[in-house]
Image (cartoon, rainbow, N blue to C red):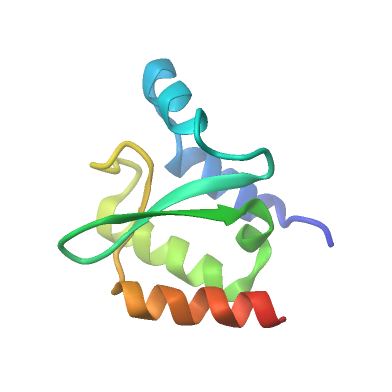
Length: 97
């Protein structure tokens, strides 16, 4: 399964961090995964496979994050502005496909 270059470019733009913030976030993330923060008020950190970036449903979440935050994410990593229960449904759907 290949990655759409637009999804990768969008993720890189969203995830542009200072070197110290990037190294802190990457220290607990396995290779081939990325950390995202999910929630409307209280943010919870999730580790997800990079392969999700290629999925249309996850790309929709990325576009929502872009609309809400632009390329500035207050948590220092990718922040997705949706309820945690909705995020769990999306992840469950992606895991089954």
